Length: 330
Image (cartoon, rainbow, N blue to C red):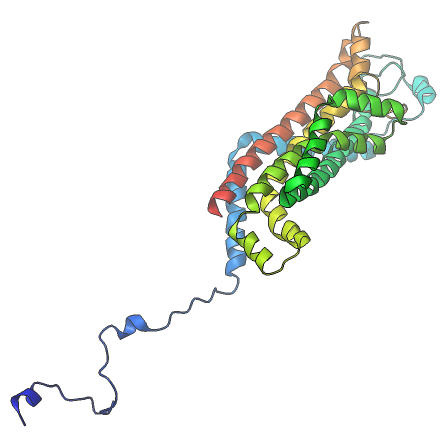
């Protein structure tokens, strides 16, 4: 055996002469398991939702807004079940109460010019205002999102034509448009929902169209397109869901705007026809009677409108901040 052979370390007996010597870095070359633990995605979504809720709750004005809105919903829809008043027959109301009576034990907020109890009238009118506000905001947001997403995704001359239609409608003052439509057609609660939605879908359409122009260039959208995904699938499954934060925030503000639009129509005498009512019509009546000395009739409806609109504004601001945290995490 030569000296060169003596310097070579003996092979491991278990490995045999055909196996290489074990590498000191072998433990670093072992395969790594990249499998996502079961429930990991749900846990991530749950953690994001928890963080969004924490950011929202930290905004005390938003919490106050939620309490006010829940209180008004109970007041308008549960209150009439506990506080029974006549809100349909004016002749019966005149028989049971004094006309323009001041607040007293039987009528905590007094009565109006037709003898209706003002507290019960607030509940009755609040149902109309809240239903029209929520329903018209939903219809306007839904149609505006679909219209804007299709316009932004299609692009080209289709996008140009669809946006010019929006520009033309935006050039017409909303209140003037509402007055014309309500004057031409018979005023009903359903009509107010669709008329207010008709003048309110333009803003979300432009907003979602801008979001879509940015999202359609993302890698995952391009991948779906290369794989043969249909346009409806791309818009419905990949573009619209990624604008959900913008949609929720806009819908919240739109509820407040719809209530204000209905109040404006009621204030100029184009609200829900009698015996129905809304807060705007009550405010208009209160202004007229306040000039005659019945000052207590102007405050209830005006205070309800202010509190509800401000509460939705607080909630919308907090949702914008909370969903911004969601976007940053994504």
